[in-house]
Image (cartoon, rainbow, N blue to C red; front, side, top):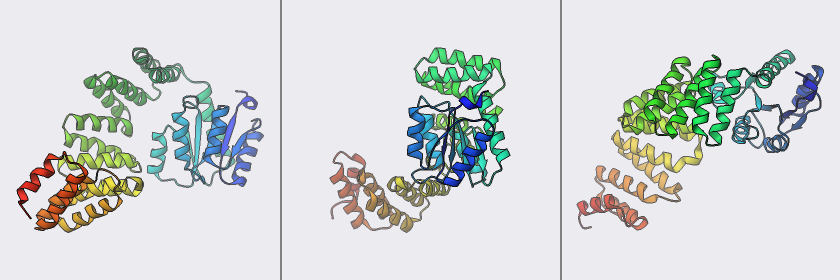
Length: 352
């Protein structure tokens, strides 16, 4: 491996750390490197001339290093680029979240030059001199992106036969392809194979939860999504999905807790989550708290207000405030005239 020919992009808001990383790598034979203090510029540098390695800090001025990693993985030219994430957070939940986005290595600050060099060498060796199984796996991923499903499945099966490397990931990918072909039973078998080989493979637990929910097996979905949420709790979308499964399974207190966790992680979904939390509280007969939640949801809502008005009306009926309930049902019908549930409930209330 001729390090002098390898292209490296360093993304770090600290000029001192950028210099330390560059100097450390140059001393071991690396050539000139590109660097940036923010994620957007770093992404542009990488996209313009795809590097062999990106080393990024978790805390950047314009985005997190995790968001940068996600953008890198979404770019077909950079999808297989080695990516090392540096963070001051050693918690396993943060490491798990980075692993979900296919980080190549994770370094916790403060770190020594030796640790940095060892991680870089290990990552580049695995990336630049892949085993036959890893080569087949990457080829299959490319074929999936190109829509060549049958060829992708053949390559994934080659990967399984060639190596023990990341077998859980291969089984998961096979399951994903089979799902797109509506072969859900076979997909489920492969997801189960994935979690048997790695009981921390969150994507496979998620996929099993999704399948169970679609089949109406909400208690099974709760079990699977509970596993993935326990392993990697910092994913807002997963917490929301877990909340929906808990609500469908009748665990209203658990659903409320999951919705709150999702809201803490992603305040952009505030309206939807407040409405769902209101439903969970209403089902627990915590009527005044539910009413407050629905009113907060209405204050932030820009669309689909009719659903919140309808939910609030049901809560108000239970609070024996029929006049206010009638008002909100009328509001629901103003927003959506074709809303039979609201019209039926309004007729049951009778005239004002």
